[in-house]
Structures are given as C-alpha cells and as structure tokens.
Image 1: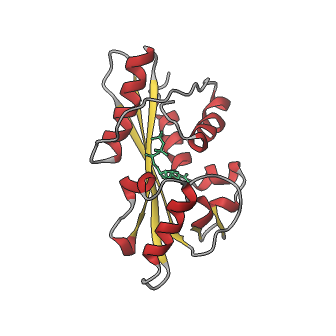
Image 2 (image 1 turned 30 degrees about the vertical axis):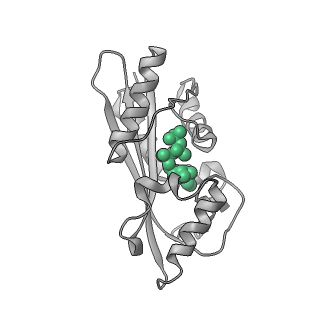
Image 3 (image 1 turned 90 degrees about the horizontal axis):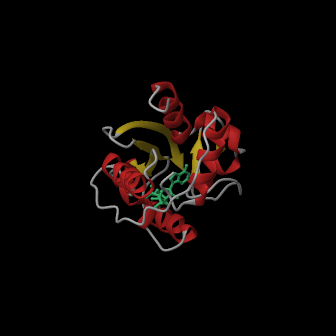
Length: 182
Ligand code: ITT
C-alpha cells in the first residue's frame, strides 16, 4: 500500500485483510505531479512496485465542493500543513456561500503488478460539508463530511459504517470484484 497517510492505511487493512491480503505500507516519496486522481494513484502504485518488486496499490482521493467549482479536489491534501488547518481553510473558503455546501468524495485506486499494465477503479460518495466538526472517528475531512442518508458525518461513524458509505469502501469493493488481485 503506497501511502504515508495512516488513516488510509488503517482503512485498507480493515477492508483487505478480511479478504485474505496482507497490507504492508510503503511510502513512495514521490511528488504528486499528475493532473488527475488516476495519474497520481498510478504514480504512487508504480513507485512502490518498482521499489519492492511486489504488487502495489496507490490511492489518490479528495473532496470536491460544488460551490467552489470542485475545489479542493486533487489539492485536498495541500490546503494547509496540518489536517485541522486544512479543514479550517476549507470552511473559511465556504463561509460566503449559502448552505447546503454539496460535495463529493472520490477515491481512485491504482493497482500496479510487475509486468502488467496498471489498472484502476474509482469510488464516489455524495454528501455535504457542514460548518461544525462532528465526531472524533476517522481522519482527514471526516468530521465535516455529512452523509444525509446516514444522518451522520464520516467522523461520527464507526469504521464498519464508514466503509459501507464511503468512496474508499466502494472503490475497494470494485477492486475485489474485478478479480485483478487473484
Ligand atoms: P498519500 O498520498 O501518501 O496516500 P495523502 O494524505 O497525501 O496520502 P492524497 O494525496 O490522496 O493523500 O490526499 C487526499 C486528501 O483528502 C488528504 O488530505 C486526506 O486526508 C483527504 N481524504 C482522503 N480520503 C479521505 C476520507 O476517507 N476521509 C476524510 N478525508 C479524506
């Protein structure tokens, strides 16, 4: 798993270990120079595969806010130095706009295997950004991402529940269903 994000790593362990996979973290240490989630996910997966010689997955994800024309999207990790700063910056930018602040989380997973073409799957979840931080579970923007159908933010869901609703849960289920991991 080509990530330095502990929150993501925990979720991949949760989602893939019950399916029989051992998830080993590897920090690819590359610059995310791609212009799409897919390009960045592939850069991470291919760097990890090249360094380790084993199959690797990379995850590029982000939250796109309608009022901000899809921002921060690809730049979700770069809105500030720490996550509290990033979340506060997102809320600051949204302040002038009327609610609801409709948003969508996207997660693209790239799978790189030695000698094979890199393949990918994507999962999405629609919701809205809320101004007050709710719940202490999860990571990243979880406390301000509200899923109306569940009546909770991601930050208020236990891991199982988040996986059921989340962009990453959907992407991993698609990856498992693809048969590419066998
Ligand atoms: P790696 O590249 O090392 O995997 P990263 O944190 O830089 O880690 P991204 O470039 O994909 O990851 O940036 C995604 C940003 O969106 C980052 O700020 C995450 O915390 C946030 N994010 C992604 N998935 C999330 C989720 O399920 N819940 C909350 N925030 C999430």
